[in-house]
Amino acid sequence: MSTLLLNLDFGEPPPKKAFEGNAKHRRFVRKRRLLERRGFLNKKNQPPSKASKLHSEPLKKGETSSVDGTWKVSPLPKKKTVASSSGPEQALDKKAAVPWLTPAPAQKPGSAVAKVDLLGEFQSALPKMRSHPTRPHKKGPQKNPTQKNAPQSSTQSHSDNKCSGASQKMPRKMVAIDCEMVGTGPKGHVSSLARCSIVNYHGDVLYDEYILPPCHIVDYRTRWSGIRKQHMVNATPFKTARSQILKILAGKIVVGHAIHNDFKALQYFHPKSLTRDTSHIPPLNRKADCPENATMSLKTLTKKLLNRDIQVGRSGHSSVEDAQATMELYKLVEAEWEQHLAQSPPED
Image (cartoon, rainbow, N blue to C red; front, side, top):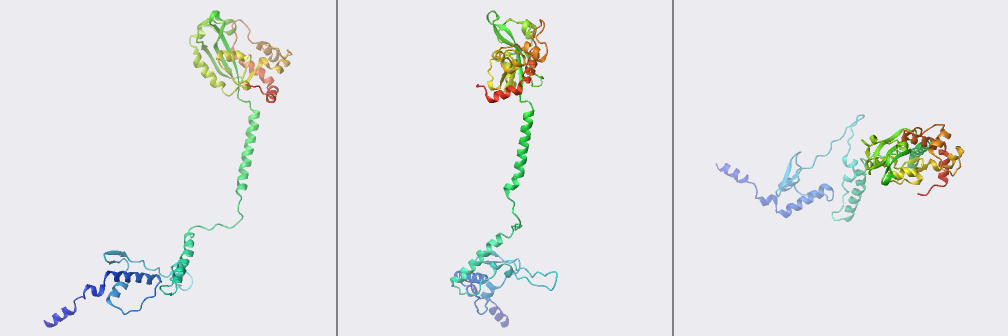
């Protein structure tokens, strides 16, 4: 019984302060161990004790230590040696592979040289670690960006020249117009639009509609216009027809004979630089053996130059036929007249 009591007395753990010490001492020990592991301080030779074993014993893999209620994850173990495929096994030292992880040589704890050397080694190795993922550029003759873009610019210029040549061969946006009028107002003396026809460069009809004037029709002028009362039954209102016609004429060269009368009936002014009036083209009169400054009728010019009869009979004129004849007459002198206009363009 006495032996049992003696064993119990000697087996009691020492007081808490005997092996743990106060908080200040524990912080000092932790900092010193950290500096020793990083190589700033040499390990102090001291007799082993329970307190030192408690703080200095390395933890096993996956264990965590708790000091003053704070938990810390144990550091990962160092990499094992890598065996080469040929020859005997050679251990690759991690510290030798990464120079900035190598601890500095033994210096005095308070030495400023040791701190500066370690900082220099760390900074010199840090850019190498950052630049490691980037692949090195292959050495060779550098390509000049201007030389690379040169073929593209040459192909673009070649295509532009090709397009410009094609545009010169193809006819520009050109249309011919002719309108037929009826009499409105007092005694039918006011000419109002009753039909409008527009053809393209090749004579194809783009627009041909009967148009209802906004005023009451007094004289249909059927002998010349070919308009009759039944044509006005389903005719397009003037405002609607005018907007449709102006959309077609916008930005195009408009050819007509005494075209100012057509524009007046449309209540519209087309730019002079885009207007071609076959009643005032001297080269056309010369071709027809007529005085250059004379105003020749469309019927006369068509008969002499195209050898075709238009505006015949008592049924009236056809605005489509007149527009097509006007375009064909202009084609006879187009090159000569366009060159003349290029040298002395008309003022709008």
